[in-house]
Length: 417
Image 1 (cartoon, rainbow, N blue to C red):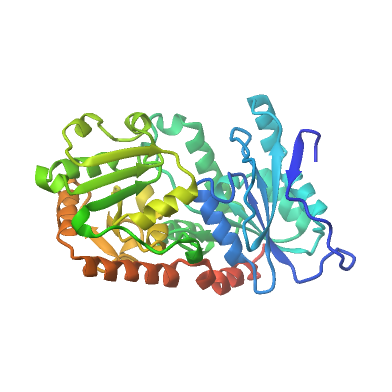
Image 2 (image 1 turned 60 degrees about the vertical axis):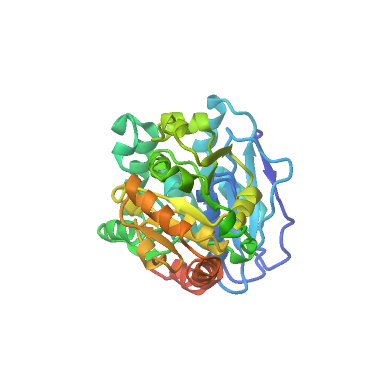
């Protein structure tokens, strides 16, 4: 650990044998995010870490906190994993670049300080974005165990204003290139993305975004007769069609609009106008109540889900949307909040029209209008049945406990080079 790095969450070394180990080898997950609940990637990695550990063990997570993000005064301590958080002092680029280059060494030293020795780690689990030559070589050779990558997205250059000239996009494609040449096994968020990776000779397990259903309070929205509460939670960017949602609402009759309210959590009106497809001029002609909350804590998102009748998601049908899997859908289902969406990725296998939500025929404004009109015609007992089906679907398809046996067995399968 260099003098610029501090460690949060250190534990004393275990009192075990020569290696300090008291149990069987366990997985090591490496992150570089606002873990555990900073964004969709952090949420995915937390649940993946929980399901990665075989019964009787806990995944060790070494997370390199992003220099550019403020560290919370009271960092959360997620249950079910052993977390070590690395923090690099300073936010200047001259500080961040050396820290990123030295990340594999700093991660290895942090693991050593936790008592990890050769043979203590069964597998290193890396998000695709952290698949670099340094991370792969140092961790694989030092710990003498296979590396498995988790692929949760595959970007398209058309998502970015500058295409191939976008540094993030170049890094993303470079990490994917390295993974398909150096790694044998991967977990993937969708069947489309898994198909791409298996086409390069990798063994892939499809694992959709997972949730902890126990985290979500029961749904408690008011009666539908008081108005239809809709929610969009997330950062739309170019992947979510926020403009289409608002145009669909604008095509309702004024009487219908007065019965509709839309809460947008995760982005301000100004940011939505700048960084999404939203044409703010559409808002001027809408009678329905539209609230922009900006970024809100995770607890607030859970409360909003519990108080809403439907969460909304409209996406393109190809490219990024086909390869990814929106994590907001499992979270909404776990909260008992049915979803109003169009089918992309693998959603058709989990959200059935009139059961866990209302499925749009397409991703145009008239499709949204039609879906909201259907929601306005629902009776309270029909919505309640949909809410119960949503929670049941979440527990059976997305809860991390449901995936533990399959994921942990896949990660330790002996398929090394």
